[in-house]
Amino acid sequence: MASHTLIQGFPSTYVKLGILRSSSNGVRSWGSLVCRKKKRCKPLLMKINAVINDPSHSTIDFDDPDWKIHYQEKFEECIRLPHLSDNLNVTPRHTTFSLKKRVGQVINGIDSSEEKSDYVNDDDRALLKVIKFSSPTSAGAECIDPYCNWVELWVHRAGPRKQIYFEPENVKAAIVTCGGLCPGLNDVIRQIVFTLEVYGVKEIVGIPFGYRGFVDEELTEIKLSRDIVQNINLSGGSLLGVSRGGANINDIVDRIQAKNISMLFVLGGNGTHAGTQAIHDECQKRRMKISIICVPKTIDNDILLMDKTFGFDTAVEEAQRAINSAYIEAHSAYNGIGLVKLMGRSSGFIAMHASLSSGQTDICLIPEVPFDLEGQYGVLNYLEKLMQKKGSAVICVAEGAGQDLLERSNATDASGNVVLADIGVYLQQNIKKHFKDLGIPADVKYIDPTYMIRAVRANASDAILCTVLGQNAVHGAFAGFSGITVGICNSHYVYLPISEVIKSHRLVDPNSRMWHRCLTSTGQPDFI
Ligand SMILES: Nc1ncnc2c1ncn2[C@@H]1O[C@H](COP(=O)(O)OP(=O)(O)O)[C@@H](O)[C@H]1O
Ligand SMILES: O=P(O)(O)OC[C@H]1O[C@](O)(COP(=O)(O)O)[C@@H](O)[C@@H]1O
Ligand SMILES: [Mg+2]
Image (tube, rainbow, N blue to C red; front, top):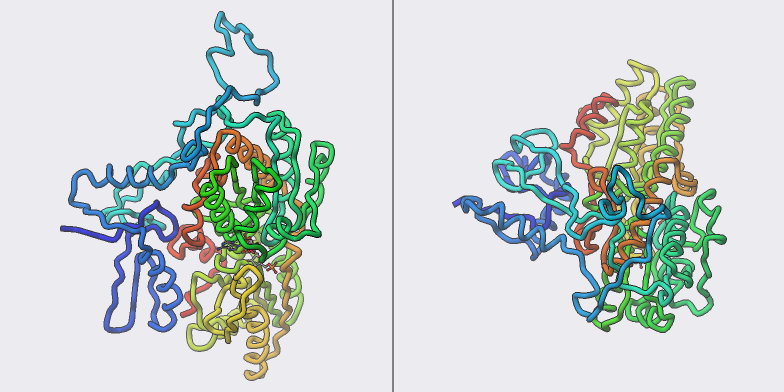
C-alpha cells in the first residue's frame, strides 16, 4: 500500500509530498532540496520537518480510488470561511451596497437589473493551482501524490454579497495597522473607509500604533471619514502609525468590547495574522457579534497561498534602485564590488525579484539557499573569477541569508521575531579581508537601503492591489465572515481563513522556475 504523509491543507512551497531520504555520503534530500553537507542542510530540513510533523497532518492511502475526493473534502473543510452564523443566531438583510447605476434599464427587451447582478455568490470559487505537472521532477512541481496527479482545488471568491449581516448605521468599524511599515498601508485604509461609507457606516475609527493602541491609555482612537483619508495615499507610511510587540489578547478583546467595535480591519503580516486569529477566537468564545478581517501587509511577500502581498512590488522597485547604484559604483571603480543588503527575514523574494528586475546582479543570496563563503565553490572564489573576467561585480543579499555562517544571539524583537545577525556587514568585511590577503585591490561599496524601500508610497500596481483588497475586506465583513484574510490568487481576488495562511512562512522554492530564472540571469553557480 502506498501510504504517504499528506500535508493537510493545500499546496504551497512546502505542500509537496516529501519523502525524506538519507544516504551514506551525507546527501540528504527532500523533494527538490539537496544539500551536500549534512550539517549545512539542517536549517532547511528543520523547516520541512516542522511542516511534516504538524499534528494536523494526516495519512492518505493513494491506492484508494477515491483518494482525490477525500483530499478535496479535507481541503474544502480547511478552506471554509468562518462566519458569524457559526455560533450566533444572526439573520441577514438585503445589502445596502449598490453601484450607482440606473436600475431597471431595458436593453434588447431584457431588464438588466434582473438578468445581471453585481454580487458575488457564496458558492463562487477561484482555482488555487492552475498548472498540471506531469511528473514530480517537472521544474517547480508541487505534488500531492507520488505521480503528481492534478487535483482540482478551489478557494472562495471575494466581493460584495447580496445579503449582509450588519445594519450599517449600527456599525462601529475600526482599522489598525501592525508590524513594520509597508507601501500601500494608507491606500488600504482609504479604501476601507470609502467602502464602509458606501455601505452607510457612520462611525469609523483608527486605532493608533498597532495592537498597542488598544491598551495604551494615552493613545486615543482617530476618527476617520472620506474627507480625512482623501489624500493619504499620496504619502508612504501609515496615517495610524504602526508598532511591533504589544498587548495581551484578553486585554485587546476587553477594549474591543468596551469600545463597542463591530468590525475590525487589521493590516499586518504573519505576526499580526497570528494575533488576529487569537483575537477572533477570543471574540467567538465571548459570543461577540464582530467581524474581524485581515489585509496581508508585508514587503517580504511571505504569506502563504497568495500571488503576492501589497507593498512587495513597490519594495522591489525601490530595491532595484539600490542595485543600480551599486552597479554604477562597482562598474566605475577598479575591481569594484557593489554589495546590497535587502530586507527579507525568512524569504528571499525581494532579493530575487530585485535581482531579476535590475538585471545587474552577479550574485543573489537568499535565506532558502545555503552557500559557502570560503573554499573551491565559495562566494569569495567566484568573486575572484568575476574580478578577472569583468573587473567588477554586484552582490545582492537578503538579510536572512547565510545565517548559519554567523554568530547568532538569542535576541528577539518586541514581537518575538528573531533578531538576525548582519550578513551584509559580515560579507563586506570578509570580501575586503579576502582580497587584502590575496594582495589584490578591491573597492567594496556596501549599500543598506533597508527602510528606504518600505517608507515610500505605493507604486501603480500596488495601489490597485490595495484598492481591491481594501474594498474586499469591507465586503467580507458585511457578508458576516470573521477570522479571514483577503488575497490575490492566480490574479483573482479571494478570501482565505487566517488559520490556513499562518501555518508557515511562504518561502522561495529553490526548485521553482523563478529561482532558476534568477540563476540564469545572474549566471552564478552553486555556492556549496
Ligand atoms: N503568535 C502571535 N500571537 C499573537 N500576537 C502576535 C503573534 N506574533 C506577533 N504578534 C503581534 O502581532 C503584531 C505584529 O507582529 P510582527 O511580527 O511585528 O509584524 P508582522 O505582522 O508584520 O509580521 C505585534 O504587535 C505582535 O505582538
Ligand atoms: O526594523 P523592523 O521594523 O523590525 O523591520 C525589519 C523587518 O521588516 C521586514 O522587511 C518586514 O517584516 P514584517 O512583515 O514583519 O513587517 C523584515 O524582513 C525585516 O526584518
Ligand atoms: Mg512578520
